[in-house]
Structure formats: structure tokens, C-alpha cells
Length: 385
Image (cartoon, rainbow, N blue to C red; front, side, top):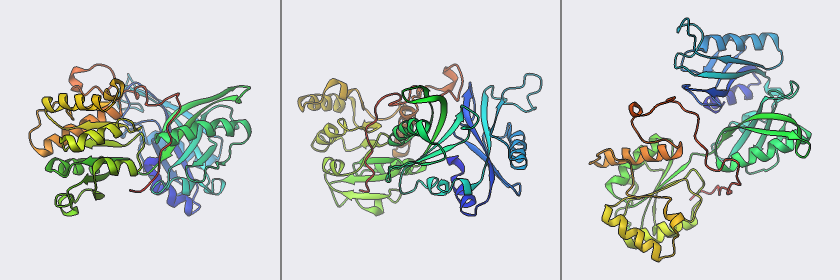
């Protein structure tokens, strides 16, 4: 539902009932991920898309029926039609499971605030499979308040809260299974946890031309971009108009005092040992999502030697993407920024980085093993730099 958060937040504040159709399962190739929603209000206004156009008409009618009948939430499945590719179905070959439910904002007074992830992280846990009386119920978990609220109660509330808090700390949306045993929750539930969080951070160290181009690419991808350099003559807002902030400080000192999380991308473009070594030594010990460093093969080899001498372990060094970026044959700062951004995207989603023409299987494959799935998460520090 986060893809239509602005509209839903407005409808909630206006106490306007709506039908919500959410992708709760994907099989094979599908154009949009789990958690994507369409909503329709009582006047027939629609917002969002769940299939890029393939099944929107059928989903719209299901939403209208949910508003009219005011019945229990319903599940629907849409797949490829062998007989008629233009009939209701996904011509891309995948299948979508969709949950359709009527939502009255008066029954969910916290939903509007939960959909506002601009200043604090909030998780909206939605039961998408389980006993009929629990289907569609929601639980809201706020990273700042820490007290959950919503229509789930008892053991189900406690079990869902634990998984929602884990995903909230990781800053990602996912479907999880909870319960099914007496120790936690008798009911077995499948829960879709929508996480509304502030933008992930891209920390660019080195006020060089490549940093300006990478800042533009990072902003385009939705990152909150910071450029940091110890040299005030180079680290100026005028040189980096696409950055959210430009910081004059020694890189390792700034990294030690700023907030990072598992979505943070650290890009070291200085290729100067006096900056790189203390910075990378610290970065490789932090729970950030991506760490890359610019430099030639010779610079890379020397960097590894110096980091090893500084006590960085082989396991930590394995996290370092150096030389930074994918092999695109890049020459200009803009081309280099594209190669770095492409590597960050591939690393985030466990992509191969290969041309799709050289791969097999679904193009929109289900996410590979997510970072941290089923394990303890490191808490995120929500700080402004």
C-alpha cells in the first residue's frame, strides 16, 4: 500500500471508506512486487496499479463489489491465460495473489499516521492468510513510540509484533509466517508487513567530479545523498546541487557520528590512503548495506594490504566492492556513476549484474535470500547528520 500512501493518507484524514486490493503473493514473473496496492473509493476514484495494466479492470470490479457488499476480505488469483492473452490474466507469465478488503478509516484511526514515513519508520502488519475473523486485520508498530496499536489482540498481536519490529529495523517490506504453535500463537498466520521508512542514505566520500554525477544518480534512485570531504574548498553545496547535504569533515570522523542502517550505501571515491584506510576500517565494521571504493587494481591491492595491517579481517574485506562499480566500460563521470548505481541496485536485490539476454528464468524473480531473513537484526540509528 506504500505505493499509494499519499492518496490513502488523504482519504483516511477525510474519513472516506475505500476498497484496498494488495498483492500478497507472486509466482513466476510479475511486473510489481508483493505489497503493491490499488485502492478505489466509494465515488469510483481509483489509484495505483498492481500489474502494469494486465488485470486492473478485474481488480477494479472486485474493489467496487467489496465497497458495495461490505463483506469479509476476499482472495483472488490472476494468472496467464493460455486461451486468450488479452483476457484477464498476466501475459508476462506470472501469477498474482490479491487480497481485497473494505477499509473504513474510522476503524483504523492510526492508519493515516502510519502511512507517513517521512520522519519516522512505521510498520503496518496486515494479515493476508489465516482464520476468517483475523483476515485483513492490521497492527501498527512505530519505531519511536515502540507501542503497537491496531485490531490484532492476544497471542496473535504479540507474535506479529515481533516479526514486524524485525522488518522495521531492517527497513523493508516482506511477507512472513507467524504462529502455528502453542508457545507463540495457536493460529498460523501469513502477514504482509509494509514498512514506511525515511529514504535510505547514500554517503559519498570525496568531493570530486565523480561524486557530483553519483549524487545525481543517487537522488534519482531515491537516496538521501550526503557528500563529505575534509577539504572545504571542494566540499561546497554549489558543486553538489543534487546532494541533500554537503559536509566538511574528515570522512572517518563524520561516519562515526552519523546514523546508518542496513540500507545505507557507502561510496568511497577519494582513492587516497590517508582518507580511505581509517574510513573503510570503520565502515567495514558497521551494519551498512553496501561499501564500495574507487581506484585502480594497483590501488585496490595496496588498499587491501593496508586494511589487513590495520586489523581488518578477511570476512570484513569480503564485503568491500573494489574497484567500485560494474564493468560497463565507463569512462566519463556520468558513465561511472551509472556503473556504481547499477552495482548498488544489483547488490541490494541480489541481482547477477548480467544482461537479461544471458540469463534464464523469470525476469521479475522473487527476491533472493534477503539480508537478515530469519536472523537477528541490528537496530537502526535514526539520526540526522
